[in-house]
Length: 214
Ligand code: DX5
Ligand code: ZN
Image (cartoon, rainbow, N blue to C red; front, side, top):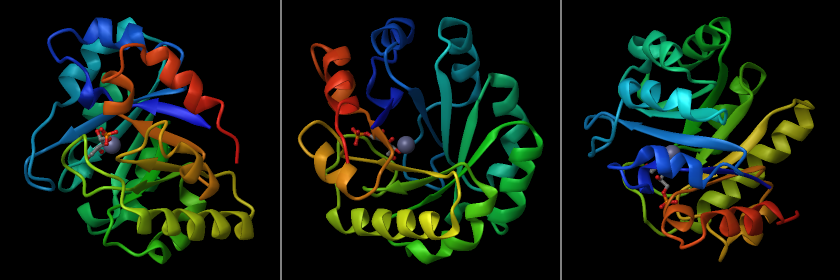
């Protein structure tokens, strides 16, 4: 299992230390919220840019914003390595994913809990990762919705059927307590906010999650 800790659960007054605490992770998950697509505001490209010199981790930027196509250049300049856009946030997800690829950034498509798995099937050739929300987006610290893991399984099966090198990521309510179930659903990358940053020893939590096999 790969692990992408979500900075949303870190101490925003000490982000440099937060990034240092999760140096053994595979990616750093950066939740950008605009208060419109989701009912909460987090941080934007400025914070991501400020963190860029402090870590070599892959910046996994999850855009929970309306019409993300307006801000792709900003996130590229900030140092994003991967950008996930929500299927529900734009009129033409395919066009936005193609633009992200052309910019030299790794594209990912995200679906919220009420969006069916099948909508991403035709988009699989355009992405490196599918992000399945396992909670309603907007807030950290929620409980994983088990039905969302069935969608992960369906998407993983379709990826295997199309024989594509696409990863499946689960985001929301994931931690050591349920990582085995998450892995069994075909998930390759676990996002974990509160489970990692809320722990006394984040490195130990990361190691335990990484050691989970399918
Ligand atoms: C929710 C965010 C998640 C969230 C995960 O909208 O996309 O990345 O921070 O936090 P936990 O792991 O606490 O559920
Ligand atoms: Zn996220």
